Image 1 (cartoon, rainbow over the protein chains, first blue to last red):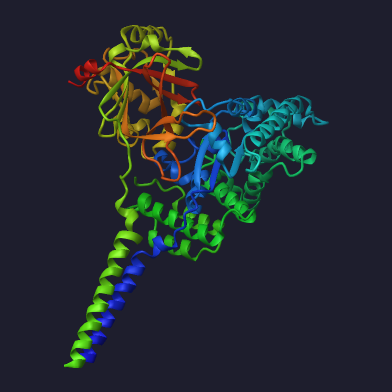
Image 2 (image 1 turned 45 degrees about the vertical axis):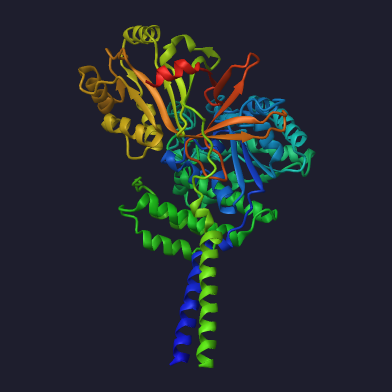
Length: 345
Length: 252
């Protein structure tokens, strides 16, 4: 009898201990990576005011937030919508922290600095005009090259300034993606019509490749810089990733870009986040197993928070996320299921 | 008997062990759950800063704000309010401009951004949209009479065509405010010895920081000031602390 009592008590103690361990297991596996600091600088693609939707979910969708959270890194977003290379240079050239955003200190203390810039240099200044010139026979890139030579000079100064402030930081520059999916209004309707009148063989789906001529030239600024300054920074080829997804499924680019035809959508941010994450893993800065587990949790929590009482089959999507072996698969599971569904927030 | 004593000893030790294990689990391993709001610092007293500079895209708009009714308020409970009340000059200037418009103002292009920020909202039901602004962003528009003919016409026109109709004017008592939680932070700067005094406004992940960060500082004459800076709008709002006795009066 006594042996039975001891056995029962042992069992109870074991259960209590097991439950206690289980209850705290999540905490137990958490790591304190907050000493690693990652900062994003640049333009609206990085800032993520337009694109993430609903806006109250900005901190769960913008790529710097996602990467920061799934790795447990301290993250700071010091990008400014509308900035061109010249304005970014001015922003980081300040000798002191002008406000409590402490931009200069933030740069100085970062382990990783991610830069999204260049897009506005081209898109804000006569994008359609340059496309028209690119269509000439032979193609005329004179004006756009003049513009990009200024951008190149600014990139040189930006890199020099960032290295002056923080020579040890891992510096990552993003390429600019091509936003001209079929139906995009990045090039105005009138300009498209004018171009099609001059070149009747041009169809709506051709604008992607036409715009690609300029986008490649724009991104060439970064590649050209690296030819003369090898190793100064790493390139995060967002354009290559978006392009690959577009080539695999032309309708996908529409989903990656927000309705304003410029900024990354929730899904676009997710794709950039995962590309950046893989880069950080390649560089030995981030741990894959830890981050992918956290990424799954982040998306599953969003499902609960945003898509309860909608047509989304949350249980099935969660299962698909759990079974996903790559970041891309997680994104597919989440965004395939939620595409076109208005969140319930 | 001997065995019974030994058994009790074993049982007691095991129970104590289990008890301690649970306590350690609760107070150590899961401690973070209980610390959510700990460590937040607020103003010691309710403080009002009167707005004295509004610089937007390089232009000074301070002269368009009603002096005593345009302020930044920080309470000792952690609530913050930024209130902008246009003065009579501002309202009449805008209304003259609106009256001079020869046609309706097409704002339909903004709907895409509205739907992006708030996917459940649109120009379709502007009253609901205004309520969403309050709920999600803490943005309040005061002085709008939803039952007035002008506001009804405005909302109807936005719904039907995305246009602000002719005859729309600003109400005399319109005011805008943003309300939410704040928290005081000290930021150690690498560019100056004195730490920066930050006011974190709104929710944020503990690994990140909020979108809106205000800066508190003291000028050379010892006045307490606070600054809002937004790079996109090239906006700087500077406000000076109101004197104590006036602050009390304002609170009433």
